Image 1 (cartoon, rainbow, N blue to C red):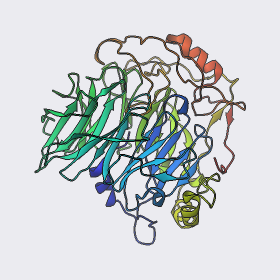
Image 2: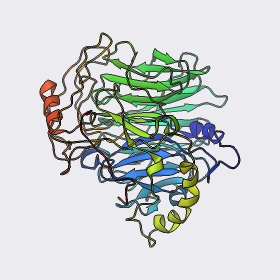
Image 3: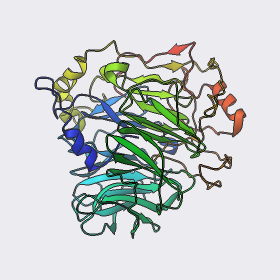
Image 4: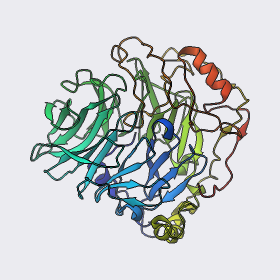
Length: 493
């Protein structure tokens, strides 16, 4: 996942284009954060860009653009996002919380959420519980929702004088909430709630002499296991706690700033990536060493969702802004090029706020996209449902096979859209423990083939049998032989 929170947004304010190249908020067009919906709405995909949101309601087949003016986040702001079980998209901005209608054509402040700035928003596996972090201004609070972001109530107050940064709720335990913050003077601290965000207590101030501290993710099955990214010099430490945030240890580090983190649905596989293409995407399986995978892109963010590793790529050097991998990052296929966008979705007509506000600004906003000096936009990759993946299953000394990259239930990685998963045993550093099989909102192939999306109404089974079934049905991405491609450009939704 990409870095969230106020500090990240402030840093990015300085990443402006030269005069004459700038668009509305003065930043080069790029994607830097991705989320996906839970359960039956796992076909809702949202990509945060430097010029607004890019949304899909069909798992990535068609995309529409939502301008920043629609949710009052103009000014180089990087809002945090969460998606509820009904597809409700919640945006946390410096101007407040915003929720959507079903078509994402109207945005409004949800009842109960104070009209103030927000640094973060996070949700459980099923999307029903959301926690928003109001701040940072030294008088910060948690704001809570139990209905997928439709309504909110006040939660715990952050201790006076603390400036909050990030928040995460445990995917399978809505009672467990973590917060990172800073005391006056910049000393980082971690706080924890065991009652759903109603009260908080401090757990540690020891981050191995690092400064910028950001919650990376909480283990999907073990709420006591969490990961933290901490800046030290020009690089980033990845810290891990197995005791609910009371102590942390360094598990790896990057020489450049770590901008990507992803965690598989069973918690057994971790991916990281930095701003340095030379470092690449690195993967650790079951607590083993981090080793580089085969995918070679300029990473802006990582997200694991429903058996796929999504990657925010560099539009200029890679030819696309969002890609996905079904083999743990060994191969990455393009899913969306920003240069193929055609503006606000057709479903949002002139009578809607998005249609009336966003559509007239598209020619100005799209000019920097069209002027990107790069190769032709990469075509999205789709696969015929009758085609079996012909990529070899390569056993590597440093990790899993190509089909054993921690891919589990239909759920998102990190803090997004995950279905409830029972606690299935020991921590990441122990051996693998198969989680109980359970029906969930799985993937179903579209009538005209299989694409890089997840659908509904399928049941997964553990082990190799599950993967053979998925490959036969064409439910995952990465077939080399036969490809279907999206119409170019997509129209509407």
